Length: 242
Image (cartoon, rainbow, N blue to C red; front, side, top):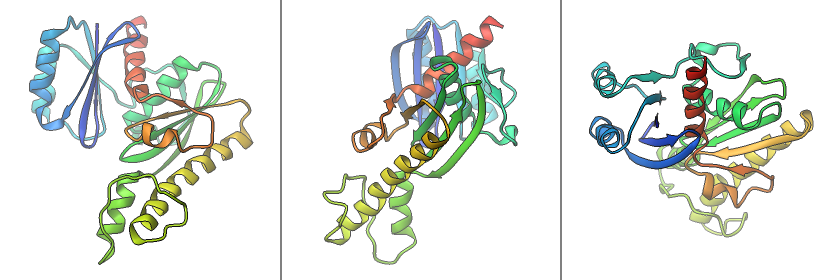
């Protein structure tokens, strides 16, 4: 079985795959990664493992992980099943690499826009020639709520909440409308930009805010919270076969 680890900005997501099927999922804080991964390996017959980390893992933690099972650490040098045309490939986030791998494997020879709605909202585009062209990065929902509170003197810090109406009739509803409706309009607008330029566009929505956003979007999408993990597993399988 394959062990797939996605180290995000705030938490760690782990999946155990039997070929291309998720058999176990785990979520925990980054501070307990060593003890939790040790438990997972103990309870599953792991033969290969891969790590994608958008935050810094200390050399000590990396060494401890390598002692448990040989890990592949995703970087811009990792062999991937698509052609990378990004102008600065060394700066392309490993999470975005994994997402594009997922698209290349699951939607081969199609125009695919992958939207990852998490701490940031990332847009990544793979064309029907299997070429990664790039995309965009914008603030995620929680960053938008937090910035309104942090950079003003009186606005409260709120949790994500679907607005009752796009016309907010009080401060709380105005913030909810501004943030959530703003994100919805942004995502639908970006999707339409791509649709106007690329035929038969497939849109994948993933990330922590997938469920919250998917029911509010007008555009037709594939919603899959595990898409990044599936992409990492695809990288592992792809490199085994090389």
